[in-house]
Length: 225
Image (tube, rainbow, N blue to C red; front, top):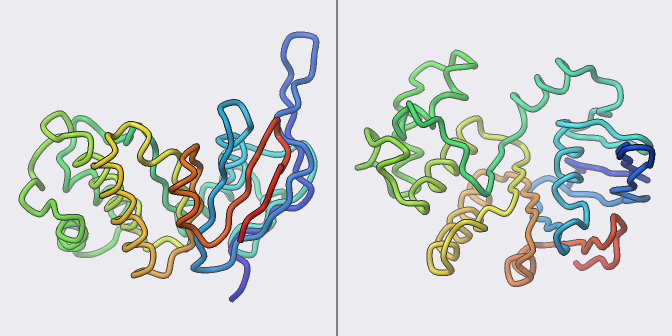
């Protein structure tokens, strides 16, 4: 295995009024290609901030992040965006589907942005994998929360990402639906050989991953493997 994500001595501070707020303090970990990894911790522990930094959505104050072999500090905003478009998938707690597009259209947005031929055909195949081939023409408002998250999963895997970042992917779902989404997420991840980094407060979900870290007050409290 080779490292898909390496975080070294990461610090993140935000200015709050006249004071500095330390959100992350000396965080280091590594994720191998194809590995599943969880970041757990209570609200306010820095989980989502850490995920955003790892994906290049924000920049660090100190420390280094290597994503897909590139140091994010060496890239400008456009460079980080290109790296994400080519290598990264996202799944969010609130689905973030475009309300004016059908399920199929939402899935193929990443493919069309890259001018992929037969985007619609690939999109239909992905919807079939998540069990929604008969809902391709439905809009998000016509889908249940679980169905919307399945569309979001299909979209996340559309570009065959090297790494997928999932921020509380079952946070807005009931237990039964959440369990189905978890199963689907791990199945698609294994099938495509994608590294998976999950932010969650759900310890049961974290225990299903290969490795995990627990954050508290911006520091790694424990590591598990």
